[in-house]
Amino acid sequence: MCGIFGYIGPKNVAKTTIEGLKTLEYRGYDSAGIAGISHGKIYYCKEVGKVEVLEKEVQKSQMVIDVGIAQTRWATHGKPSKINAHPHLDNDGTIALVHNGIIENYESLKQMLQTNGAKFVSQTDTEVIAHLVSSRYKGDFLKAVQEAVPLLKGAFAIAIIHRDFPDRMIAVAHQSPLIIGKGYGETFISSDANAFAAHTREVVYLADSEIAVVKAHEIEIYNSSMETVVRETKTLSNAMQEATKSGFAHFTLKEINEQPKTIRSALLSRFIDGYGTAIFEEIGLDLNELLAVQRILILACGTSWNAGYLSSYMFEDKARIPVQVEISSEFRYKNPVVPSGTLVIAISQSGETADTIAAVRELKAKGIRVLGICNVHDSTLAREADACIFLKAGPEIGVCSTKAFTSQIVVLTLLCLMMARMRHMGKREGQDFLDALQKLPEQVQSVLDQSELIRKIAKKYAHYENFFFLGRGYMYPTSLEGALKLKEISYINANGYPAGEMKHGPIALINEACPTVALCANKITYEKFLSNLMEIKARSGPIIAIAEEDNKNIEKIADDVIWVPATIDELAVVPTTIATQLLAYYIALERGTDIDQPRNLAKSVTVE
Ligand code: M6R
Image (cartoon, rainbow, N blue to C red):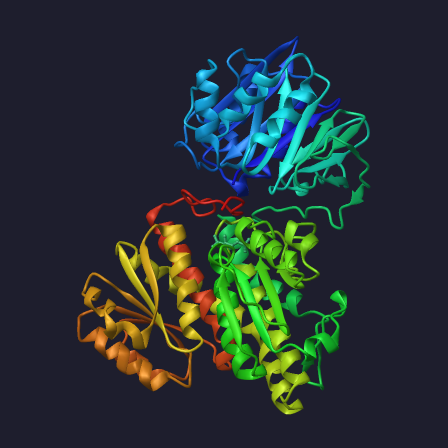
């Protein structure tokens, strides 16, 4: 994981580098560091904690440097500490570097370097790169890097400086993103172009195994055969939108509250009222290709996987297309059978999730086309998929995904509607679907309007350490997403489970200390679900029901009820999820956790 940033140019280097680094905190935030060159010496500063801790130290020391490289870390090898934080230096302090990724063969390299006299100080895999480049250095900085890089195995994006070359940094990318931003007399490098989008929108993407010598006025790129590469500059399609809390206590709360707007935006210009169907004009999907689709394969992680899984119920039920939903980290190491006629959909809010990107690359290497569903323009998925549908949800800053999930549901529902209408779904049924979709923003608002009530319920249950989220039908994937939200921001153990499956084992965990959040909004299985809840109640499990307004009989079973507006089963995930998001948020608030940046997590999981 981790984010790296570098700057060379006339601005205050330390300040510009740290400002860029702050926008990469979504990639990890357990420690941070910066290095630069001044008067033939490398200066660096590392701190445990967020970038603001580093910033204060750098301000205190009034760091003045000619070139700056920095990293915000999500620990993989070695716990978060000053020693393990980047940059890492060689023993003479001639070379400093920052790294995003994992060096898989670091143990064997370390042994070899130690035998030759290198002294290691950290537990990281990254430190081997500093000693390796140093061991190859005979006065030619580029040559040393070019000799070292082929010895590295794994995924890496690296920025390196040498104390004798204050006019440059060397950037290396291999299966980890690294983007160079070309300004007027200044150059940036970053794991994500948005980090320098306020300065320049002219970018160069480094391809696998490429090495770039980056100076303020020029960039030279070399391929793995050490030949010069001529690479066209691209212009970013959208500058990063400003992300502020707009008066909310947390980005997460702001993003939960934005959902009436983000759902409208996901729907905008993507349906034809009166014909009961959807269109995605912006990606120019070939309708004949869609008509020929015989099965769907969905790849995603985390919340995006939950959205994909939920959509599989819908695609099968409404479009009658069989769907296989795969967790990217598992799929990438399978030898999958992907028959012709398969539509591959890769879902990722960030478009940078390493496992999803790797799974996509594996399929593309087999000649299979991929449709991306993504929120971030110019992200790796957006660039590498054959076509991409954007969520249009605006930047999602809170590590826990909220508005992206509901937008994913809307986009997937529209896609399902379009494919169902191309097959056998009639106009009337299609229009009913569309009508229900268009009511969602208003319905979401009505759940948001109950925030105070949900806050009271959250207060009552915030001290419990174990929760179940139960549902049936569409409410089962909804329960997975509800439980994921609670565990990631409140650090409570929460399990999403199909209610009918409880009696096959997990019901053993039910007692008065284990509340169940009962997701009732599935009409087809409602009566069966009530019986499952009676089984929970009979074992003294407290029940918080999230139920549609006409399910009044739930009051007799549940200890507390949050009412949500009724919709069709396929879309009930949306109002119910808003209630689970608010419940998780207020429980976390009560427990005093770091809601926007929960411990051990990162917004974008860029290592496998
Ligand atoms: O950017 P992506 O959608 O690919 O991210 C996938 C997961 O890492 C992400 O959804 C994660 O599970 C969230 N923190 C959940 O809230």
